Structure formats: C-alpha cells, structure tokens
Length: 308
Image 1: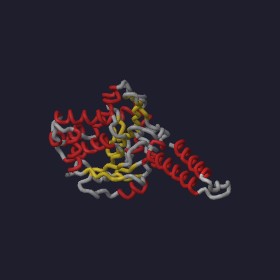
Image 2: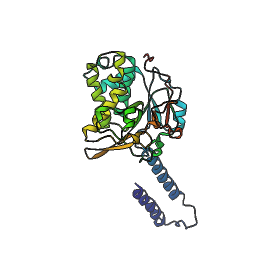
Image 3: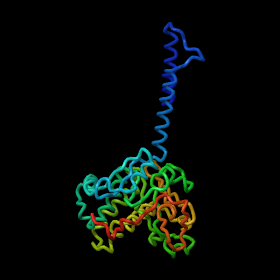
Image 4: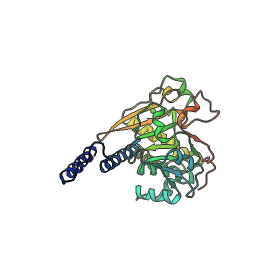
C-alpha cells in the first residue's frame, strides 16, 4: 500500500515536470504531494487502530430493550469507535436460528437467564468483539486489557476468572482439568469472530443442556459459568494443554494458551482473578489489587432475580 502510494506521488511529480510548465522547487509548497502523503498517513493510522487488538469493535450487551444499559456512556467514552449491540430476546432468537437452524432455542434455554447466557455465546462466536452484562462498568479501555498484564495485544480470546477454589490455592498446581479448580467468568468475554474455542464451548452447551434437569439449581451447569468453564476446559484439554500453577491466576499475570488450528495459532488468554472477577470483601486469599481491575461487575442483575 505504502509503496503503491509513493509511486503515485513520483508519477504526479514526473508528469508535472514533463508537461512544459515549471517544476516545483524544493522550497515551494507541494500541495498535491502533501495531500497524498497526509492521506497515506491517515489510512495507515486508521488501519493500525482497527487492528490494534484484532477484535471487531462491537460491544454486545444483554438487554431487555435497546438502551437498557446504564454504563453505555462510560464504555463508549473509554472505547471510541465501538458500537453497541443490544442482545434483546428477538436478537438472540435470530442469532440462534442462524447458528442452529434445526434446533429450537426454548428446548435449550428454559429460563430467561439461560437465554441471556446462550445469547452472549452466540454473538461472540458469530461476530466477535466484547460481551458484557448490562451491570458491568468499564474501568480500563479494551485495547489495554492484555497489555495491563504484560501480554501481547493480538489475542484471539480474552477470559477472566470468577473464583479459584480454596483447595486449588493450597496446592502447587492442578494437573487435571476435571477438578475444575477455577471458574471462568462470563459476564465479560472478548474474542475474534468464528473462534474455534468459542464454537466448541457453544456447541457443547447446546448439546448437553437439554440432558440436564431443568431446575433453578442447575442453571449454572446448563448454560451459565459452570457450563462455559467446562466448555473452555474441554477445548484446551482436548488439545493436550494443562493448567499452570494457580498462582498464575491469583498473584500472577494470567496464562496464555496457544493451540495450533489449521495453520493458525489460536491464542486464548485467561487473565487473573483481579482483572474481571474482583469483588469487594471477597476472601479465599485471592489477590485483589484495585489498580489491576479492568471492569467492575455491580451484581445488580443477579441471575436469581433476572426475568426476561
């Protein structure tokens, strides 16, 4: 792109000089050349800004109605150029029909909160970007999330930790995924579109949810963070990856898992607890450095109270 534009500039200068008119001297204003150079810089900056994280600049928010998002101004101020996608019931139904044309959403998601769970996975898997609950506030611009924990910025999936089990913190590390020593938060998820990890987790949840008893107690296991964590672990363990020491997710900087997928390295970053999961007064010896918080979950929309 840059070389092509420079050739255009040279050609313009050459044609101008060969036309019989005077060539521009070194100290005369080269308006056309300057204009092309300015445009080139603008296009470069625009491209660089778009590709800074590789994430589509879409913020998906589960909402009963469009505009039901108290923290919208703060998110858009901290993340200029990002659009808001309201995941209403109608929007979720449409996403589900496109993704699973032979299935019915009400056979998978029985409770209203389960529909909200499925909606976030559908939107992130299909379109990428960032998902947040409508009671999550922005503390740090999205482009800085990985950088804050000393990871590269071109990450395919960014996840956080909701909690770490006491027994896991007491051990040096966890070798088996089945123990579920930690739970992945799903009130904040970031991913590039068509990501194989998100696809795996979504397919697993949609397949298994109807087999689990439809009770309020089981919502976490059917479609909620328990189900999502199981999907993430299943994907990573299926590619031969193991959990690092739990300290990586507590006092450490998180962990970057890399999976070779069809010639592409799928980078799945799980940030430490204090990034997304920090809660005032939370115990279990969890590190909760306030300056490392990226978002703040207000817990205003408790799933036990949510009606859609």
